[in-house]
Amino acid sequence: MMVYAALLEMKRLAIVQSSGLADHNVAAPMSILWQTPAYFLQGVAEVFCCIGMSQFFYDQAPDSMKSLCSALGQLAIASGAYLNTFVLGVVTMVTTSSGAPGWIPDNLNEGHLDYFFWMMATLSLLNLAVFVHSSTRHRENTAS
Image (cartoon, rainbow, N blue to C red):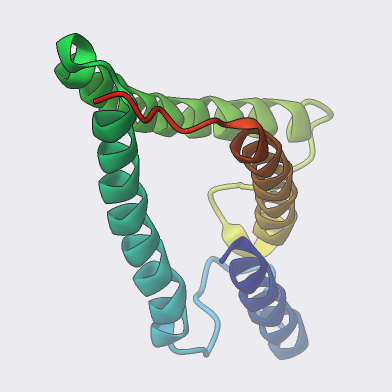
């Protein structure tokens, strides 16, 4: 999903630069509907993640902790949103430290939002590796 967003942003920047709109805060002559697949996949992923995580915690938790584990799962999702905001803030601060417009300036035609998407894709791959490692070590709780 992040790879798609990065490729789409690279295409948008190429259109902006080739049409001479890079200096202006004008949208590229490209339909916003190109973002639809990414948002659709994001929504589907959120639904399956939330449902699957709640089911996993409810099935694997001891009877006395089922509600607490389900609540902690939802807290993990909320924490992820705050972590994403923190990462965005750090990237903005680091990339603008030398006076450059940075990756995510107010005028996106001057920045490189695609770099941010590539970084997020890399972090997602690292997250997947940790998930695969953890899930292969998990032993199912058969006591109910």
